Length: 346
Image: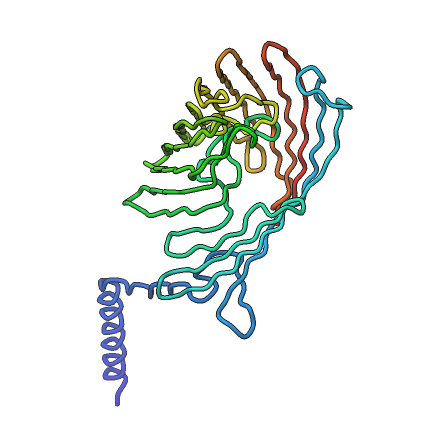
């Protein structure tokens, strides 16, 4: 092969390579294979690990914290205006996937007390659990909206972007045991939905008021709205109850009963709360909170207002410190206080 023929072959090969590269560039890019769906314990969420020799997965979590308080004895009479305390919570979740969905059981111990022990599957939870109306706000020492633990049954289901929850729980009776015990459970219904940065939660509860010589039907309404504006998170909360004052507050200083001894003169009351939290960078948040609670029963009344400011600083993942200052007025008497929480979550 002479030099001219060799040059022609090389030029032709180069032209073919260039044309082939150009053609390949015009072809649609090959899509990456979709990520495989999580399987095993990963499908149950973060933190679950497999139990050797079976198909059950467990997750262990909890917290330890220090709670230190200074309060004027005017509004919170104690032996000392300064209190130092600490507590802990320890939770074990066991779960496994099945044809009917995830079967899960939970045990939560808080200060040696069983705060939760339940089993759940297919949307049904049975046992002791956080009340479905645990939707209030507030910081460490202020903001006592309804949110205790309850024993009973609840069922949740999704309806589009919304969630509906129904529950039957042991009656939250606010009359003393000597004046009667409710014969039927409290019935609750909650609706929650989210629309982008805006979310709404609303619910109703029925409550039988049991007294010495009779009973009456009480009820409560609880609603909450949240808006995440990016630069701030805003929350509003309202509750109204008649003959069901436990749905207004969990404050131990509130001692009014739900009715008179013959189940007449049902208590009535309202709670209003508002909260604004503003993030300051990645690890800090500052916020303000206000609450107004008013309950009457016959000639008796109870009123409380609280205003608080708090600063939360995240030291490391799962470790934060949150100081709070507040002012509180109970039945016309005002006092002030400061609170410090240091908590480690795991």
